[in-house]
Amino acid sequence: MNLAVMRVTRDMRKLSFFHFAGALALAASAGMASAAELPAEGSKAPDFTLQSQEGKKVSLKDFKGQWVVLYFYPKDMTQGCTIEAHNFQRDQDQYTAKKAAIVGVSADSVDSHVQFCTKENLTFKLLADPSKEMITSYGSLSANGAMAARNTFLIDPQGTVRKVYTQVKPNPHSEEVLAALAALQK
Image 1 (cartoon, rainbow, N blue to C red):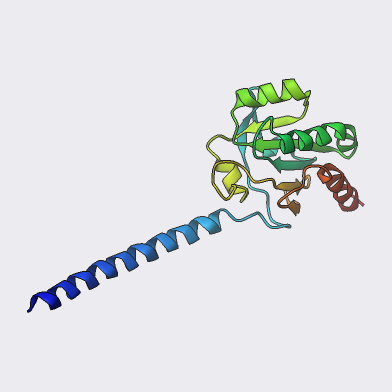
Image 2: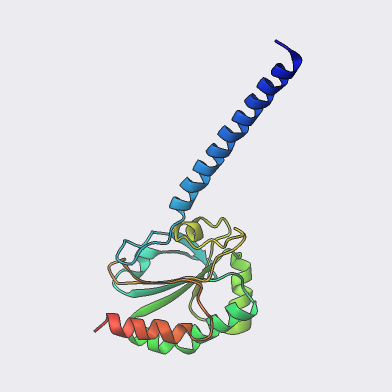
């Protein structure tokens, strides 16, 4: 075989390997995407157990018999997240009257949640998910993978997802959730 043919053959093998490796990477990322899909309305809410700012383990089953406003947010003590938390806190009595618990989740640590709750006078539960396992199970990992996306799930007393909000705008969000909760409870 002449040298030119040997080089072409070698280059084709390399190209085939890279195509194969690329196909494997694409298949792996497709598998990860399906594992990270948002739970659909009408589906069972994924279970979780995470630590709250109070240092206690909190699970979805702890809220059986009541509604849960499960909201994911990017980062403690940032402008949008503070606005969203303040609005949920402002409306806390209305949620309580509707037998609904507010539960916030971010990838921040328990210590960060303690500081955030103390500084902003937040009384509802914030759960720490630094491993991002729960965030991922709810399809709420941000595009960069570093934090939670701003999504909310309204879960009924039987543990079924009844409403899904994505790319939430912090300011009007609590009012939107309260309106949906009122409509669903009719």
